[in-house]
Length: 392
Image (cartoon, rainbow, N blue to C red; front, side, top):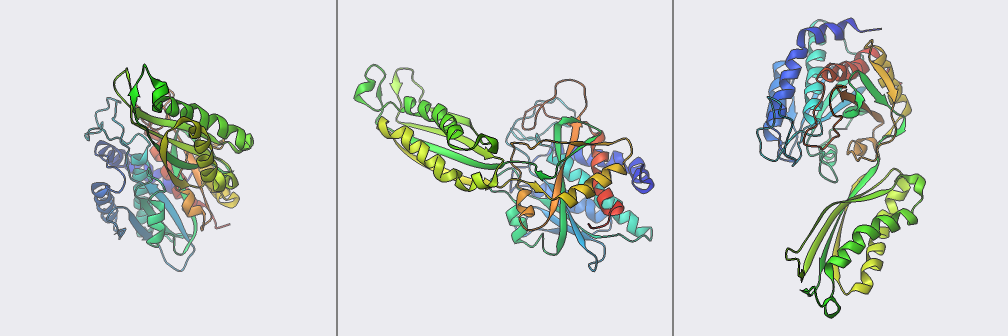
């Protein structure tokens, strides 16, 4: 099967969408600083005759399409880049030092702008939409607890019957869309441990408190003990991303910092993680004469896809023709789309973006890129939800 309306629009306009994606890709902006990206979205939607509105903090956009007296479906994309230097060598590589779209948010934004243009042209041709639609371009997905909360506070989900989103997945080939009912991602929290001690000479560790040894105890001990304190079926994992202390090889330093994340696929386990992490670190450090401060930032809950919404996505994928819907496993990654699903039913799908050529780079790697054929598939999937389905 295929959708003549969607196919015809993509045949005439996909090149423009690719250009939008590349322009955003070349000028990435960090979380809560997506001012130029926001302006780009407003300009492109306005060109389609739509009436986008900037969210109160100056980043992020909402845009309603269609009559308000029909059930309203939200379609969400994110805008922010990451503090990761790009190493793709692409002609449209990031021009912002140390910042890149290494998570695919440039693709998400371009896809949703494409959907906006497609639906606007559909209405201009005298057609009616089965649903009212709200396009939501969200800021600050990459920081905890996520910009979704700001969007929700600004009323972005008011009146929505369902909400949908896509996320680039380099583990799936372009031409596939990953679907899963139930938990799709994990809860994700961030921790930082700031340790302090008197310092001293490495020849006399017995006369001071060995801060590096204490750091090592936490680095290895917290993940190990945590894995023995929670049900292994919960998919709980703790990993460190940064460890900093000292400089001289013969001096025990006075300060050190550790930063990492704690993730779980079980919402009930997530509720108890903070006190458990605090207890374990206290037990590890107690005998070592080191003082510490623990900053525990509660992040996002798991994305839990509603079954009926997944069925709507599957029906939309079936409209695309050769595109295949595939079952996708639960991911340990966190995603603040989960906050929308706390109050509005909906689902997120995985958009295959791997070209099948060269290394299969993961998200958040400096050389991550997408097969741009996936942009058309993303537009067809979200537009298919609107044009091809009935609200279950």
